[in-house]
Length: 164
Image 1 (cartoon, rainbow, N blue to C red):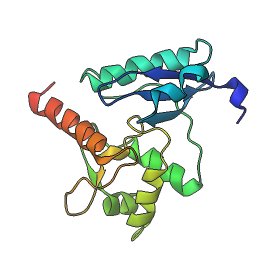
Image 2 (cartoon, rainbow, N blue to C red):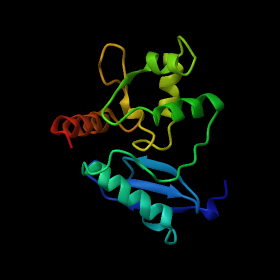
Image 3 (tube, helix red, strand yellow):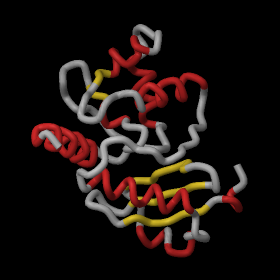
């Protein structure tokens, strides 16, 4: 991937600063819990993908959006991409266990591998790895911290309870 063709921007949000990285065709990375100072000199030219991603993420975090339409690009192993594509099929406000997700992609007993793939997801929120939980019903880990995962799950549950 040619880093000269990438554009970046910083989004101030209710869960902290978020860095968005895109090429001209798709969003390729979302970085949560970033250091605001490390991004100042890294913003790129105006990019319509970044504009759309900013708008959709803010709408999601404000409870106004349940389905993303931003073009995304997934880069990883075949297994990781299979996991991430399956994540995008989990409906808003619903949760699956790591083992159920593993079974649903034909990999019985691969719950730990699914968890590792989740941890390497470069598009959190849009590829909703926060919707995957432990078999015992606990929320489990999250690459950006469990407080953000808890916030996202609570946001989706609250909206569903209100029937919005």
